[in-house]
Length: 458
Image (tube, rainbow, N blue to C red; front, top):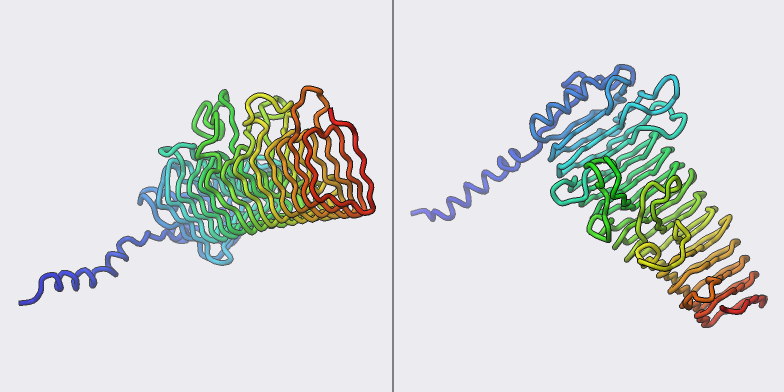
């Protein structure tokens, strides 16, 4: 008699390919819905029909063969999914979503986004998706190449997002903005000439970025932010106070990593942190931006600031090169208020190692009105280092050539000691300038030729 267990095993083995085939997501070719892809016809209606089919199917792959898919001004967003999970968007090599929807009178964007997902939903994969505006907008205006509108809670977020080898060009706003999202993987994202951030995360968690190239982004190339405003109405999505996070939590970029970032030209910063916790950043090269790396915090202060954002905690940064930026590494308190009261508004926890800053126009390193910053291993050339009104900071293993090293404490007689530590500092062709430096500890500080200026501590 045959062994029934062996028979069952054989049957299951034979059925495995069939089971796998049943689970494969259905592919929806936009050509089957009337898309042409010749760069002339308006493919928006056909793409909308394909999106509706994927939605009705409760998931699937929206597939674009090679071609240029022009989007006119007929509807708001080129591709939009709302509350649909298990969705893939796949572009063949050479496929481009071309948005030709700027306002012809103003040259501004006013008709929506390239790819939009609204939550809650999960398991979204974008592969090789290229979004490009046919003309560069006249100025910053409406239109993100990729936009994810979730909410920072387990039941309302957009989760399990993958963006693989995607690109954005000439967008009126961001290359990609993700809000209230969780478990995100971004690989080899290229952003060219956006008017706002290249890749912006707000109130997200578990972000993993490997490979970003930002060329002439109009704002930060990569930004990890969590804003707060308990009176905000419809802040992105979700209704009043949707990002009113009173303290540090999971949706403050918690559990995130980013590596292999290259930013060149444009304005604002290479990488920015605001209200972030537990993020590791490595292997960053920034050329010709305002600041290579910035960590800041601030309270809502209309009209200067529309939101509040906390100081950054548990941030580790390594292997940064800043060339021809205004500032290489920049930490400050936006409101420039005294370091008193709740320290979530001024005490950071940042560890930076292996910084190279060359030919910055303002400062190689600038730390002001903040606490809790450690820099270990930095080479700065042709521009000064400034530490102003800072506390509990350590700079260790610093080589500064052709620039001054300036430390200035708080002037108030009642101000506590700064508890600053300078260790293994070598200044060549520059000055060491110390003012009001109560609580400053210097170990192995060398200045050649020797020029040191000191002022009495309070």
